[in-house]
Image (cartoon, rainbow, N blue to C red; front, side, top):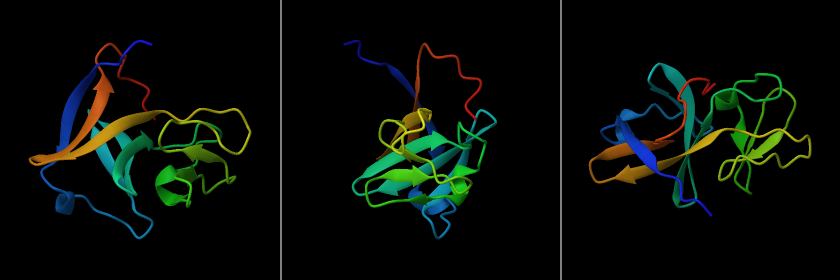
Length: 119
């Protein structure tokens, strides 16, 4: 298996700097692109701003007990850990690693990936 190499981008100095709505899904920007950011259990996760099916705004969805984002438009479910469609429709959700470090919150983008089209 090929190990992915990431370029890490600082998106906030601290967790307090991020605007967290009630559903726990924040919208952050990186290079002019909107992404969703959430904390679930002990981890941090980042995923596409819009659903790959019909473009529903995932920041308006909810995270279920299994760690899946539920699209507010049609209820499709995607794992925030690996992007897999959990409700059976066959779509894939783009996602990126996120970390909280001593000096801030970071998102990882693959070094060799083409950065456009995050939404």
